[in-house]
Length: 322
Ligand code: GLU
Image 1 (cartoon, rainbow, N blue to C red):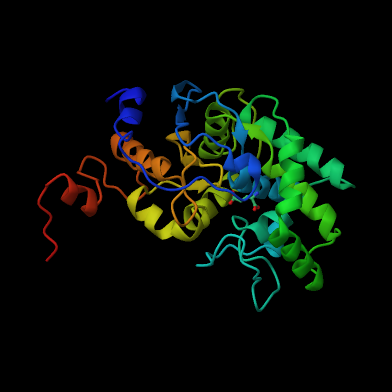
Image 2: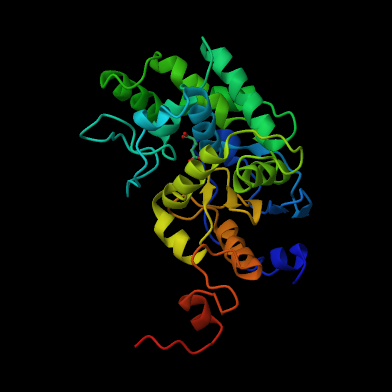
């Protein structure tokens, strides 16, 4: 098995994409930043490149907000948010037409709601609970970057619109401003690839953090969350992702991707340039490589060649398509 350095180096020629510019702090990201970390079942970690560079977690927080909401509501969050893929942009101003619920927890409407379903009798209390919960997933103390969260609130017009829409449907209890503030602070928690990889691993290993040994959420919750990552985690490219990479994951506008391969490993990659659907270009390329090298594809066939038909064609292996 090649080293993680060699696997990372194998995709350095992959270029393209553009850094997100929704807030100035994201627009300033270094496009050459490229880090990866992998966490194995015994908590052992491998890292390569800029794996200790801090960035805002952005949408990669959504699986963990869903997990905390499920934990704090005793599973009732599942009555309040759908679990179906949308085929729409992550910030589409749309709710389920027959219920008024957000379509799933991996789009903004859903995450605005799940962030506000966690325990706490005020916005600040919910944010403290979220930061503590994320820290338990990561196995270390994480913090919110206040400048980024204020910028998110200032520029998050669609999030304000979504919160008002949910209030008009009776789906959201809090004021729109308070709900957006809690969500914006959650998106502005600072992580590096090593912290995010441990978070992904905690879901991959049934809610138990493999580094600290803490059972952060139940096995049932981890299974629910990883299932929704598999169907809805990579924006509007979740089908393409599942075919090519085959590992439940969540991507984000900071160029981070968190991967949870059940019982196998957790991983995180950061590389800011994004494709047209919002997923890190190099992040996806390296995810494909990791999936192939470690045999992680959910629908692969152990012991038999498991690269996608497309990859086999690329490397010149004959594929009989008849
Ligand atoms: N802060 C971003 C927003 O809600 C997160 C977007 C993302 O990473 O997809 O607009």
